[in-house]
Image (cartoon, rainbow, N blue to C red; front, side, top):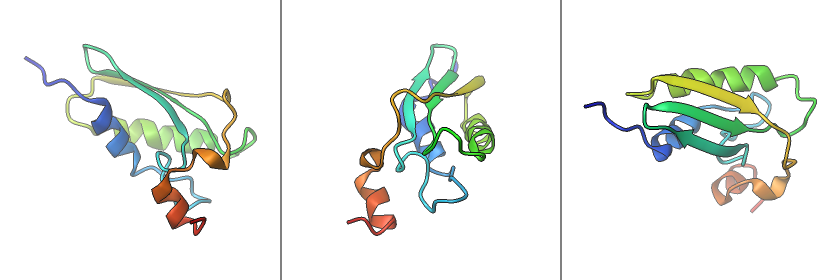
Length: 103
């Protein structure tokens, strides 16, 4: 029987992914909108960017996909970049706010 990958494991892995222009991971920046892991350990992630025109978007999404692929048991990964709802600084976690000196 295959071990079930959890949403928490995926989110923990995504904490290793950074926007190169901001020293906070994509989870604490509030860029991850949804993580779904189906019964066959296929992972679907909806994420956004701090700005719709961010030239680093494809790079960040690829980094997220590569990092999730490294989680034990993951069979397939699809990362979709969405822009609804629009990201705002209010979405930054308390830890992210501390790292950015906003608290």
